[in-house]
Amino acid sequence: MTNADMTRQRFTGRVALVTGGGSGIGRAVARALAAEGASVAVAGRDAATLAATVTLIEADGGTAAAIPADVTVAEQVSRLVDTTVDRFGALDVAVNNAGVLGRPGPLADVAEPDWHTVIDTNLTGVYLCMKHEIARMRGRGGAIVNISSNIGAHGRIPGLGVYGAAKAAVSALTRSTALEYIGENIRINAVSPGPSDTTMSLRPGETPADRTARLAAALPIGRVGTLPEITAAVLWLAADESGFTVGHDLVVDGGATA
Ligand SMILES: NC(=O)c1ccc[n+]([C@@H]2O[C@H](COP(=O)([O-])OP(=O)(O)OC[C@H]3O[C@@H](n4cnc5c(N)ncnc54)[C@H](O)[C@@H]3O)[C@@H](O)[C@H]2O)c1
Image (cartoon, rainbow, N blue to C red; front, side):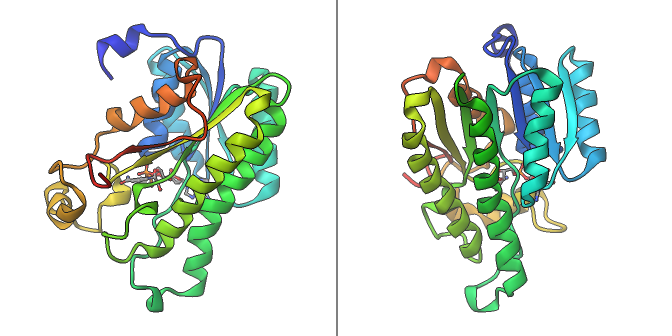
């Protein structure tokens, strides 16, 4: 985060919910929202990593709560949104970021349980989160940012077909849902990162340099995306300054889909 970002307070008095907030992009987004004044509900499956995110936010002087929830389970998502509103009084911003890559491989080798895990987490999870978030935003407005992926728009990283199919569907669901609620002041957009600097894009035993070499065909800029670069896009779509941007899928991928 730059010093300029630190002085901006676009989310003062707002309540934000970030799924998958215990690591990677979700943790970075939760910290950035809190640094700009939001009270942040940090959600995910692993209580220990959520607590670590909250500790980081509080050390920076921010306000956050860890709320364990599995985004594939409807009752847990419903409870997550209720708990967020009970704790902080409202829901203004939701970043639906929880996701899994799945086990990479060509389609005929994809086991059915793996198919369901990737679709359930990346697509059904976004459906469930939006459903319950929208219910709480109706009547007062809000902003939702779904984390999709540029793999939804190209197939040049082999073995990610199921993941790409789920993410393409997230981008489509973002567009249609955005138009359904545009009249209620609920703005819904997506960010589609390219390969970024988190453990998700690293294979076991791989160094960051190995990763850049393996993904060269999908990285025309010659490197992966940094967390501040992805976070800046998410916060812009969550903030009032992007008020005329609706149903947009903001690709942040170093030119990979250009
Ligand atoms: N890192 C990349 O290269 C990249 C590129 C494009 C898109 N993305 C997307 O960005 C998002 C964040 O990924 P990341 O790179 O930070 O990886 P990550 O693995 O660090 O983060 C994913 C988070 O989602 C959580 N999660 C997984 N399943 C869940 C479930 N059922 N319920 C609740 N939480 C669950 C994980 O525990 C983890 O904290 C994902 O949606 C991913 O698909 C990542």
